Length: 208
Image 1 (cartoon, rainbow, N blue to C red):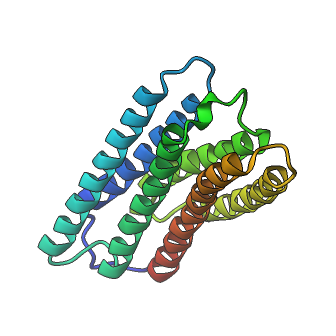
Image 2 (image 1 turned 135 degrees about the vertical axis):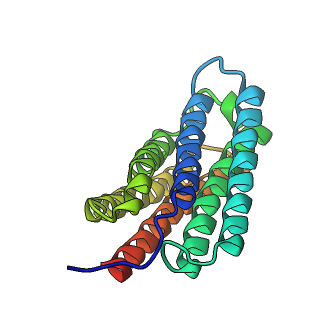
Image 3 (image 1 turned 180 degrees about the horizontal axis):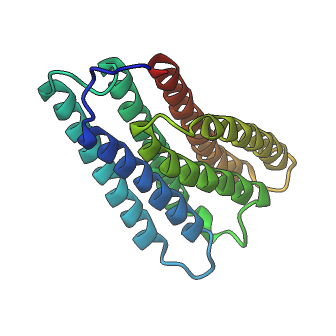
């Protein structure tokens, strides 16, 4: 039987879970931006509020690392996981704000592939939020990182098809440049979710 001398410090798991739940809010707000007749400025403002809350959670996590003598798992892994969750939120917020600032929601419709990419992000966010509380027991996590990897591959395919669409001549050059910035942020968020999952896998292997 394996014994652990590490404490079961609940605050870290609570902060990881709060950060992940904010990612769910972020992807839901991105979905709202695509709805007809939506108050785009209101959605963008709420997305910024969620991003600021995520920053606050990250700072709380760093303070907790610095004030805790023995952490539940390696300090560098706690720091890395918190930082990577915050990175996802930064990309989601950037994508939403660019959609608003560039006026892209005023187009008759956004490309179908962009909706597909946001759908992938929404699924990644929900799976990540579901996985974070399981860090406490380190059980049932393998299916999480396998599914995140599969979804990241789906996101890559949607991203490539979106690039094909953007450079097909359907949109004018300025609109293409604006959309490209947005889709690059969405694709970066998709990759960042995989970085979170890779770190969780690293932690689980170390603690097994």
